[in-house]
Structure formats: C-alpha cells, structure tokens
Length: 285
Image 1 (cartoon, one colour):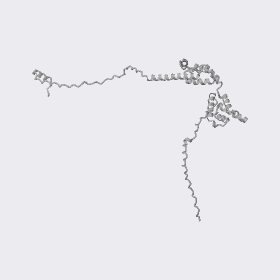
Image 2 (cartoon, rainbow, N blue to C red; image 1 turned 90 degrees about the vertical axis):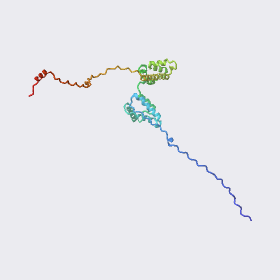
Image 3 (cartoon, rainbow, N blue to C red; image 1 turned 180 degrees about the vertical axis):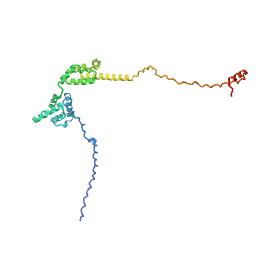
Image 4 (tube, rainbow, N blue to C red; image 1 turned 180 degrees about the horizontal axis):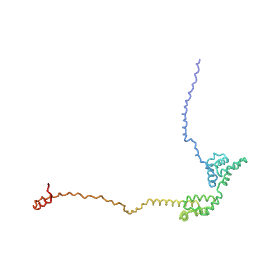
C-alpha cells in the first residue's frame, strides 16, 4: 500500500521591480508662456477734406489696414471705418452724400477698397499736382539757396515723384541745377569716385557728404575762434575826479617856554629922581 503522492512544488515567481516614477516637467514660468501682443496702433487723424492733407490721410489709413488686417473681414468694413474720420468740411459732406445714395438705392455706392481709393484721390488729392511739379522744376524756385543739402533733397524728391520722372539723366540735370554752385562743381570735378551721370542716388550721396563736411568744418572754425585767447588791450588810464579837501589847520608843535630872567634889583637911584617920582604920585591922605 502506497502513501499519498507528494504535492508538486511551485517555482517562486520572479520578483519584478517597477521603474522609478518619472517626475513631471516643472511648469514654465508665466512670463515665458505669455502670448506676445502687438502694440496698440495709433488711429489716423480726423480728416476735413483739405486737398493738401489728403495724401497723408490716405497713407495713414492704408498703413493701419496693413498692420491690423485681422480687425477687418471685408472691404465694406474698411470703407466704413475710414469714413468715421470724416468729421467736418468737404469730407463730411462727401460721406453724407454716400450714405444718402445708399438710402435711395439700398446699395452703398462704393463696394471695394480699390474703388474707394480711386474716388478718394479724385476728390481730395491736389488738382494738377503733376503739372505744378513740372512747372516748379522748370523754374528756379526749388533751388537750394540757403538750405542744407538734406532739406533741398527732401523737397526735390517730392517734386520729382509727382510728375513721375523716370529718366535718371533728367533727374540728375534737375538736381544739379538746383544745387549750390560750389557743391555741384566739387562733385563734377572729383578726380576719383565721381558719380556717374546715370546714377541719381550716387549724386545725392555725394552732395550730402560734401555738405556735411562743410558743416563740420564751420563748426570747428567757430569753436576755434571761441577758444583762441587774444591779448587784452590795456585801457588808457583816465584821471579819476577828486574833490580838493582842505585839511584842518595843524597847530605848530608846542615849544617849551624858557623861564624869563628875574628882574634886576632896583637901584637906589639918584635923589633928584626920587623926588621927581614922589611929585608925580599923589600922597595918601
């Protein structure tokens, strides 16, 4: 008779070690996660309809629209936003006329921004600007005169851009005519680095360099005159007026008095003389 069968042995299960927990990443500082915000853009100024300021107003509106396109969803919003600056004058009347046409027809008369820019130029840009600029450049009123080259160049660029001069040689001739004689002569007779007659920008740069050198030399000369010490001229000695003061009389120095000699002893005299004296003096009673 056999005993019970032995229980099967179970192999111990291998001990598994779990990996250490991974620490979560530290939070990024709020200053680094803060979303970048665009600086606030200045709004265009109010517009009254003067032709002299029409170009500047349209440029300011165009610049705002390009820098903040997310604020507008269509051209109609751009047009209405621009009309909010038409406060008085011819601009207010033109804006009022547009809305009156919309009330009569039910459709706003300007549908695209391109159409708005074209009508704005015809209404508020200077009339015959190109002809005026051409006439100015044909005369002598635009010459440099007593201005610096920088000031002259700024006005010349504006005049040359209005008529649309594109020929570089024509630009150089006009610019050279308006320069001071000594400036344009120095550029034309430069032995080295003379700008070509087909490069207006090189002429502009050369004129500015010569004028800046002149201004620097004048500043140096003025400083030199101030720091130079000139010998001072001796002023003639003038007699100073004075009043004649009479000095008080000065007492002569005191001289000690010599004692008088004692009187001589009386002599008995002559008897005849004594009798004579007695006769002249009355006798006491």
